[in-house]
Length: 126
Figure 1: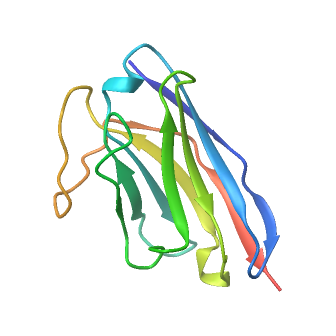
Figure 2: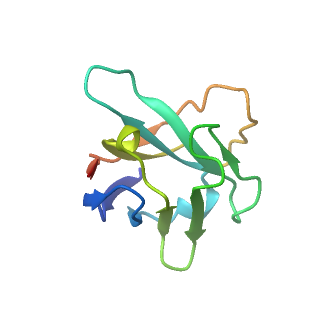
Figure 3: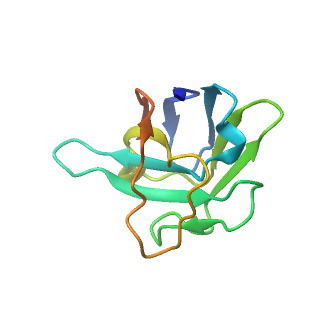
């Protein structure tokens, strides 16, 4: 079992930056492909970014490529999302997610998350 808790959300101005964290409990974090998703009001949850067990194999949605960076620290059981050049359309609840430990993920496949955090609100305003 893996429990995920996001933090770091808040209110930021257009063009600003935020760093989200996702703290994982359990010893299997290092064995999980991890991802970030977001859900804006009235919209479906959308994939943002994912990375592999050791921080390799990163993949981003086109909407955030070049502005967001996903990373992980397996020693701290923590996933990060550095968000720069934020836009109003980035306003959403952001969720971290984990696949079943030991399973591989390829871009183009459904991420198929087995575990989800509770989400953290990010609001970008002028």
